[in-house]
Length: 261
Image 1: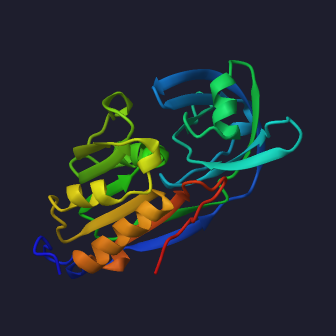
Image 2: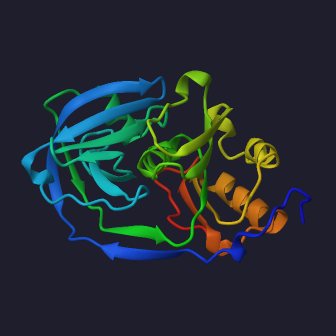
């Protein structure tokens, strides 16, 4: 076991995940804003009366958006995190990674005010509860919407550490939060997205204290390697970890919602 291993999180009461189902609804929404948040992230704000009753209870919820393919013939489906929902202004915010080259990127790059987008969900929320004293959030660009939302929604004073890989310093994001945040950024090219080594090097410098819940998402091979390291080398209890492969390098429209052994 790695000598950096700290007191096991298992000493605290184990957290639980409650799956809360929602009525599945299809909505047609209108773009109210489209802009580059960073060089490789496009923020799209959507509005419309069909947002009435929209519910998203967990920062890693997903809606499914429906987009035309390259020929404009068939609809392509992609999962996206509801980055922010404002029920007062009836506005839903989605963030799109801008360098995938797929239908979602193409749509976001040309999106303009007044355009429409169809989406469905969330079908359900997986809500965490328990004696979670600290958070460790790990991911790449595709995980940034969920990571940013989690950080912003945490209560005042809660300790949270983020470790995120992006192409450059210009792609780093800043969050408004009441939590006690320690943000760590890795810079790497997209073709290195499956390489977990930069994450493992940085994780070797970070403590894993009792009561820490680890959330990991991003390129599937990277996520699996980081998960194995935390469990096998750092002795982190599986009950205190949630991992998801949002995409696979070289494979279109691929995701593993939950990564286990």
